[in-house]
Length: 618
Image (cartoon, rainbow, N blue to C red):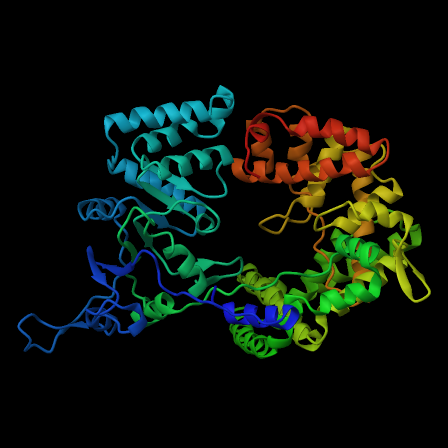
C-alpha cells in the first residue's frame, strides 16, 4: 500500500496520535528479466537492485536499435525491428531447465488464456509424472462428481482435464467456479505447474508461483489499449516467489518493439498501490444511517470519512487527469474526422435517436406517443440528410465517436468532482436524502429526517439498483409474476453487460405479464434517472435485459447448453450472475410482502440447481 502515510494522517485526524510503520522489504527477493530472442536478460544492471533504477546496458542498447560487436571495436549494427512472437513451449522448456517452474503467464484476455493452453498442449508440453497424473485425476473426479455428464460435455470438461493431467491450465472469470477452484488446489499442491491467467488471479487468490511471465505491459480497458499501472505491475509480479518455499522469485517480461526498458524499470521500482476509498452514500445506506443516527450526526460521520479526507487532497490529481483526457479526446476527434462533414454532430444525432428509441412508451398518453414518434421521425430524417451519412467509413468513424463520447462523459464527471470536492460526501448524502424525501421514503419533522414506512423496505434492499427495486415492490409491478419471470426480473436488476446491447435486442423476451412488468419497471427507472439528475446526482445505468431470457429458461428447467447459447456467456459468467440473482431473490423472499415474497422463494429453488447449485464461489 503506497499511501500508508496518507491513511495514517487520516487516522490521526479522527482518532488521535498514530504512528505509521512501513516496511518495503520483500520477504522473498524478486529478480526481474526481459525475454529477448530466446534469452533472459536481467532488467537491472549487475547490482541487481531495483531501487537503483539502473537499467541493464544491454537492454538500453537494444532499445536504441544497436548492439556492440563482441571485441569492442565495431560501431555496431542495427537490429531488425520485428515483433517477436512468443514461442510459449520453448519458454516453458527454458524455465524448466532453469528450475523456474511453477509459473504463471499473465495474458489480458480470456480467449488468449484458453488459446495459450491449446498451443502448449499441441506442442507436446507435459510437466507431470505418472503418480502426479493419478493424483490429479483422483482430485478432479472427486471435486466434479456432482456435475452431470451432459453438463460436463458443455463445459469442455475433457479438454480441461487433459490439460490438468499434463500440468497445464487456464484461470479466468469465464470458467466455472468449481473448475477454477480445482486449478487453484492443484497449483497449490504443485501438481499443476503452468497456468495462463488473466489479471483477476492477482487479486485475492492464493496461487504464488516461482516465476511470473508478462507477455505484454498493456491491456484493453473497455475503450482502448492502455499501459498497466505500477500498482497493477506490482500485483502481478507479486505472485512470484513463494514465501517459505522459494528463496527468490522471478518476473519475466516479453520483449516487444515498443518496450521501453526504463519505463519497465520505473514500474518495477515504484511503491505505487494506493488504497482509495470507494465509499459513497447510497439510498439503502442513507435510509439506514438516518434511521440509526439522524441527519445531523450522519453528516458529521460522513465528513470525517476517509473518502472525504482524500477528496480534499485530490483536486490537483483530478486536474492532471482532466488535462490528460483532453489530449486523448483531441486524438479521438482526429480519428473520427470525416471529409464529408461534421461527424461529431452526426454522432450526436445517432446517440439522441438511440436514446429516444430505447425509452418505453408505457404510461404515455396517445398525444405523448404521437409526439415521441414525430421526434423519432425528425431525428431519422436529420440522420439520413446529414453529409456524413453516406461516408464509406461511417461505422469506423462511429466507433471512434462512441469512444469520444464515453471519454467526454468521464472528463465532464472529473470536472464535476473538482467542483464538488469540498464537503463532497456530505453533499451527496444531502442530495440522496432529497430524492428520498421527494419519493416518500424519508420524512422531515422539526428540521430532522426520519424514516417513513416505505423506508423500512428500502433499508433491507441491497444492490446497485436498490431504489428501483424498492419502487417496483412499492408499486406492485412484480405481483403477478411467476417464479421464472421473477428470476428473470431479478437478473435485469443485477446484470451488467460487458458490451452495449443493440437496439431491439429485447424483442425475444418473454411476453405477457413479464413484459408488462418490465416496461413499467423501465419507465420507473427513467423517472428516477431524471429525478437524480434534477438533484445533481450522476444517475444510474439503465437496467440490462441481456440475460433475462436465459435466466427465464434456466428457472423454467431448460438444459445448460441451451441456456448458455441464449446468454452468449461463458459458464463462469452465467454462474456469477446467477449467484447475484439468487442474492436479490433471497432479499425479496424476506422483505417483499405476498405474493412476491412467496414467488421469490420458488424462484430461488428454480435458479439454485445444476452448475449454479454446486458452484460455491459467487
